[in-house]
Length: 221
Image (cartoon, rainbow, N blue to C red):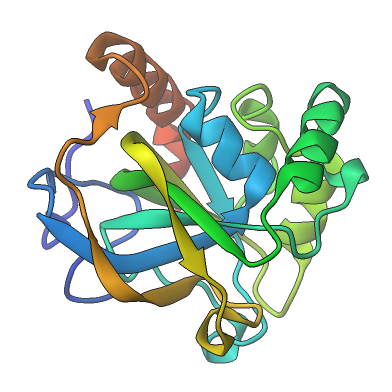
C-alpha cells in the first residue's frame, strides 16, 4: 500500500507533509474554510467525474506558493481566469453553461471536500499518467507546472460531499484576489452531507491515482 509519512495524519496545524496518505477522517461539525477553484472543476468534483485537485498557487499567496493548510474545506467556485482552451473539449459546453447560470450577487457553496492524500509532483512526466483523471488539457497543466521559480504541482485526492441545498454566500472584498484559501463570514454546518460517490467508487479512483503516483512519490520524497 502507501505508507504514511510521519506526522502526516492530518492537516489542521499547517502545511501537510508531502507524498503522504492522510488518516485524517473525522469531519468537523462546521467550517468557514473555503478553497477557491474554477467553477467547472468544482462541478466535475461535485458530479464525481474526478477526485483530483491539481494546484500551483496564487500570486497573492506567500511567494506564490500553494500550501495545504487545511484537511477539509468548502469548495468555492470561481469564474476568474476561466478560458475554454484550458479544459478538454468535451467539457467546454458545460463550462459555458455554468458561466451563464452563475449568480451575479454571490457564490453558491454546495460541496465539501476532505483531503485523503497529498502528493507534490516535481516530475513533469507524471502529468501524462494522470490524463483522464481531470478535466484540464495537457498544455494547461504543462504551463502551470513550469510557471514560477519552482516547477511542480500539488495533487490532492479528495472525497467530496454535497449539501442538501446550496448556500448562497454574498461576495465581499475578502474573497477577492488570486489566492487559494478564504474564510467565509460564518461557518457552515457539515451535518446532513452526503458523499457524491459511493465508498467503493471513490476508493477505486483514489487507489488507482495513488498507484500512478506511488513511484514518483518515493523517488521525490
